[in-house]
Image (tube, rainbow, N blue to C red; front, side):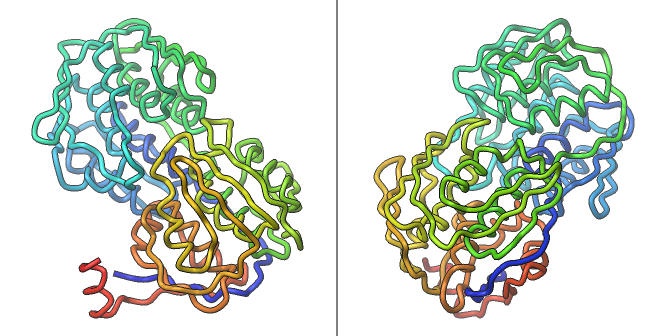
Length: 428
């Protein structure tokens, strides 16, 4: 096990390029199994979730070839292999295997998903969609059993706007008999990305990116080549890093529209934000204005960015409030920020941040992926060295993190944990 160390106080300057979207990749890889010939996915981020999903497809009989930035999946020899345990427990997005296997084989056995602990994240809307399409779904000993004689199109209204449920129902419906209509569908760019891949494979999908998606089922899908959209959350994270510690930073390979909610809030704080065609320029303000943020489904402020944004708000001149309407347990990072000297109070779904605060380097723990990003932002700001443990969470979503930040002038490196540190973590 490693720890990540950051020496604060070094201004960021230069250019950094964003990788392909993690939240697209983890859905596109399972989607590839719906084809009857090879699918190649380009612009893949080099993150652990990609490796895990590739291995899951291999367990079920697919042939995969993963090289830098590209994955080819030949699903022609796949079988409905039960995947009740093991790797499926390591990431939340393993639930996309349910929809893809159900769409391909009319049955699946998949263990309940893992991933970051952000409080209850039920998959009831996924199950509601599968059952509407004609599947019987049961939960037995921690695994989901899905079985259908034949999938048939249906009209499905999602009680809660859910990216995961929208994509999962799409995966199951593209090869179902007849027409499926998903109402109150999520609108995230990653849904459009998945719909684009499926359409290139021969699916008939209309309305992706709106709240009503219409799918006409087809008998079979064929292979294709697809390039993933840029990762808006990675882009937003580097925008926050630059707003916290940047003199002049340009973030390349960005779709500015996808991060407009963040850009607006940064401008409200006084940060210079200039959007180009596929890049964004950020320059830190000498004095940051406090703001209030409420996370919402897309195109609102992304819940994945509120944690690193909390670190930036410790430097604002006054009180700011962050309210997360998506995940109520997404404030575990505030305990770690307080170790570094932050003045943060949490009340239910909201956090009140008082600034400006001089942060101090400390030993802290990444409790989840975006909490890790928050601690990196704090480490860039802090005096002294910040040590971050449980970096495996960070590796799930940020490719080549040290290389990218070092290229901007940050002093950041990894070290192995000592026996004493490992023992301390085990006992904590």
